[in-house]
Length: 171
Image (cartoon, rainbow, N blue to C red; front, top):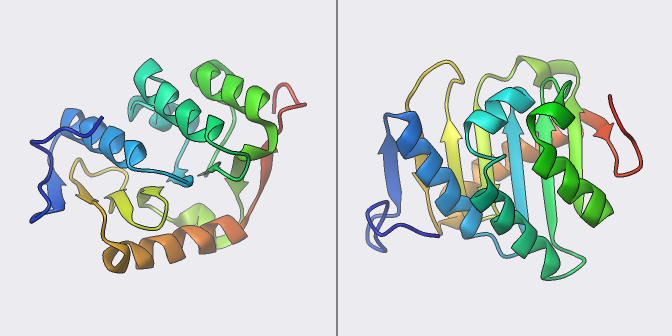
């Protein structure tokens, strides 16, 4: 659900100062995905706090996945411990959609990264430059602006390993 007050076609960029604004922006970015959602965050707790465990957002992700077997959700977490307790709806998606939902934990230098990223396809991004700072930024439907963050996510993903599978319970 894209909220009109978030952005306009003339101004797809927006700065958010509160968590409530950030959650609306995250919902907007995820709703814009047609093929893939890419998420990098610290823990299942912080992901839940951003609304990923909320029924509306879960339904948006499910709708994306049922659209075709090549649609994906990739999540990289610095610490994936406790994901089943914090995000049971996400774990249910993982069980239902197997290879379309991938949850990794980062290794190596990626464990020191302090920003947070949520990307839709290669065109829209919500990011928090420092996980401890309240300010975040959203940029919609702009592949040029999203490209550095897509590249950053791919670098983080390359330094990660599978954390949970659809056949695995617990971590």
